[in-house]
Image 1: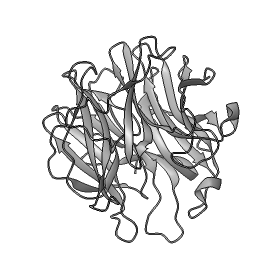
Image 2: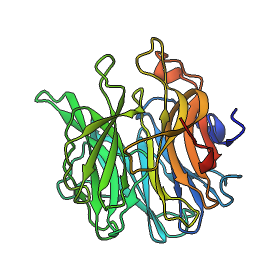
Image 3: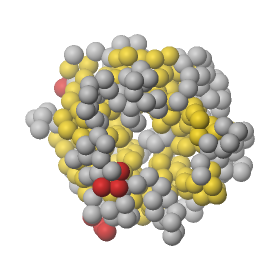
Length: 361
């Protein structure tokens, strides 16, 4: 293990009677409380199997974690999935979904609120039918949302597109946004370029949004990197998408944040996290969890640090109150091609690194 990285297991498979923990989401409140959200897949590792939305909190920069909280239980066969929380002043808004609730790829979009750093939560509000230009095939995140400098709340994600026969044929990144603290929501346009999903978004220094999306094409048609798109109207519409070869991917979900360096300089960095394995290598799998840093608003990515050499999947980064970078990520012993129900995702690991240790490549 890299001596520059301090790591602990925030969630372990089998703990609290849960088969598998997946889909990490890490957020820091205005008071400095760390909120680590996850899907608790109760009986199986399979997507959309019976799942609760759960949370662990930390008051000491992730040294220790409070006991598991069930924020929203899945009743019966329900799968409560894809946490995508956002901070709005002193309030935490948690966006998630009740997956395939009415039919395949037809989800219910849920919003919960906490005014006490995640100690207690409101009842889930169903936004599906009230969202302007709404689409019940929209899937949030997974990861985190952002609050723009204008006060707009932005929840990134994507929509599934189906053909005339009802079969899934495409997916496109897009965002939900609200200008009234989450009381009403609007669904923006989809980005160009096919098969983009699992998006994360940052606000750049000029007020534009930069969306980073996974590409779902299969090898050998996959470009082996991320798709990016820029919005100049807060996510309502998007410029033409483009590929970023420096952001290599398998494909897989990736974390994406922008933050000011806590040294008083006013400098801002972008940070991207994902498994940095090469798609074009025979037998390659999701391995090499890595963070990369851009110092020029995403034009170049010269700095990187390997956190975990072996199997690693989804991740969620955050700037911690003590100035370090925190990363919550999935890890285990899964080998590419294994049966999904038996893959060994051993848990969600929490890593802390110093910004200066993310070195030039």
